[in-house]
Image (cartoon, rainbow, N blue to C red; front, side, top):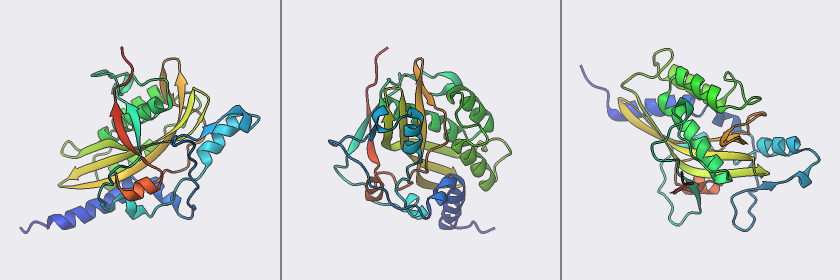
Length: 266
């Protein structure tokens, strides 16, 4: 029996990923490019209580502000990495430390720490592609008032992947490999020390007979609760742009290159 060429398998994988991991990218259609604010080279757009009478409305405006609009193919179109791109230093978690639901922990009480924690939450869910893991992570890492599991962006991604890839009902097949590594970071806004709108561009690679790769951007309201960052209350943020990791397109959409640095000490 003749084996289909790898190129055909790759096209099929790209089509599958387009339907699965970038469900939200389609919602970007018709949204104009935003003007990216930069204050002294800072990646953050600082919001304070002086900007509006109620903190909640400040946070809602930051979350709802449209982000850069890219063609959905930008996530799958290989581009050479640009040299000297602006970067964000993101603290590493504690070595070998995993918190509840096996999510990496130890990120500091800073905007960059919120970005790191959000990336750790995303990676745990997307690399597992398992609805049981998804439920455990949601229970442990979404604060009261946050998105319900049925409405959570990560739930939609997992469900779409399992359906499109024709995997078993609740988890990816053992032979299917998913890797999600942070490649870009963005702090869309802050409201005091305990609230950050954190965005992460993941370098996602999936192997199902052949390998496919894409960039996947996603944002979350992150709130500091006692001693860690969690996904906070409120409507989910506007869709983030998805672009090829490290590309000029990604940089043009506001993504800063991800740079790991040592985090807080024990």
